[in-house]
Length: 114
Length: 117
Image 1 (cartoon, chains in turn blue, orange):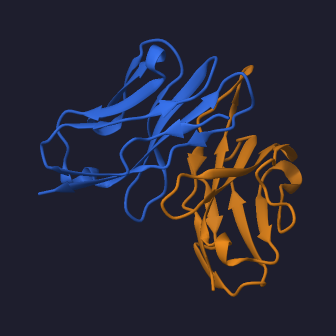
Image 2 (tube, chains in turn brown, red):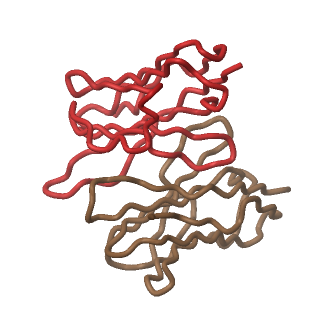
């Protein structure tokens, strides 16, 4: 079965610390990968996406993610987090060979302290 | 452009009652999705429509959940009768069809938070 795993359920960082959130998927074939963010009280928003090409993708607000096909990973990174990055982050994947059935991970709650 | 609209934003009902949620996707988006997000989990796809036809409803509990998308635009999701475990946020999303490839980028609405007592 297709699945997406996020290793960290809750991460607490101080402002200016570096961030890396893990994401692994269990798909064969070609996949599209996404990171969504949900700020407190707001709806899910797309942070960045990978469809093809350069495996290092840059998203909004200084976030980036690297697709490593050999490791089935798509980790999210940010060099220096801000208090406003406090949110829940979801990794998601879809197999491009089928209709768009997006599978989400369980999410990582990021708390950034001042 | 306007985003995905959902209503109501919050709903509290007692078990065995029925409830309905409404979704209006982004204009021109052919594909519409309903997700269930239980607290502490990621969204889980319940049903996917392509225009007014069902593409995937494999994870929809059909004994109590139903959904329709008449005219291929708005959609409603109904639960009848509700159970305690249906307490969750119900998300609607939509995506466009680009050339011969599904866009695969979904835009989400604010969700409806359902509490079943």
